[in-house]
Every structure is written in C-alpha cells, then in structure tokens.
Image (tube, rainbow, N blue to C red):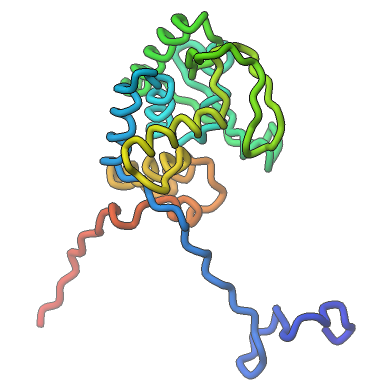
Length: 243
C-alpha cells in the first residue's frame, strides 16, 4: 500500500490490527430458488408418466440424478458405449473437467450390482432406447417432429443432435419445467434434484465429505449449500451435567 500498488483499497486487506480498517469476508448469498422436496419430486415424477405424451425419458433422468447427484448435462451425455461398461456406470464430471482438465477431473463409477435402484433405472433406460430407434444415449425420447438441430436457450446457439431421439440438456430442462407447471409447483428447476439428492444422503447418515465426493465439489461448504435446511437431521446430544 505504501508503494501505491493497491491504492484504491480504503483498507489494508492483509492487516490484523484492530485499530485500522480491515477486510471482512461477506457471507455467501442465500439461494434464491426454493429447494425441491421429495414430495414435490414424486408429484413431478408421477405426472411425467401420466401425460398424453409420456415423458418417461424425463422420469429416468430424474431418477438417475436423484441417485447419483449428476447434473443434467452429464446425464444427457451418458452413452451406452462409453458410460455403461461391464455392469458399471462411469462418469467423468463435465464441470470438473472444464475447471481442472481431463486428468484431474472427478471420475465417478457405480458397480450396478451394488446399486439395485440405479441398475433398474439403467435397465429400463436401455429398453426405452431400443424402442426409440436404438438411441445410443442413455436418456432418450421420441419427439413429435424429427429435428436434428435445436437452439439452446442457455448457450444462445444451435446445437446439433447426433440421433433423432437424443435429449439435449436444454430440452430436458424444458420438459421438467413443463411438467412442474402442470403440477402447480413454482420455482424449482431440474438442477434442484442435486440438492434433493444431497439432502437425502445426509438424512441417511452419510457425511458431508462423502456427499462432497459424490457431487464432485471442491469444498464441503458448497455441498452443504445444496442441502435443504428444513429437512436436515438434528444431532442427538448425550452430554449431561450432574447438577
């Protein structure tokens, strides 16, 4: 500061003195979107299968996301050739790969024999993919119109499909929002299923560090920020005083 390198700061961000202005970190802003409860998840899941145009692909994506805490982008990227091998589901987490590179990226796997719920979802997804013109992607949906290029609302550009029944992330999000609105539920998006997954694993006794590894986070506080505070369990205290 004496050399004017950080002259725009009204305080020394490195000082520990109490008689001078100090840099105090701000708390992270609270999430604006409401948490997805398991009850609302069940309503959306059920409604997706009751519609005239059944969204079974959405149901399978929801189930896989709740079990694995994967983002919709990673779920839509799953293929039978590369992701499901020898009874194992393998995922290189996309966001982790973008931030850390392919070598340091989080690499997750599930032995399906040890995860019967996930195995049932994968098996049904395979049956549906065969019905949908042998779609090479785990999540598939037969559209009303044969369109191989769609505009991604988030990217603002046209994204090409490699198979007519492939479900792109933007389409999956719109399917979820459409069914959510039909259920009269407001605010939540497909991404909130990750938060529901984190909360459910916490309620089943897994530690924040274990859940952090599942969600491929670099900080345990990030993992806690996904959890629904109204559903979290309380720690039972056994400490007593004699008087």
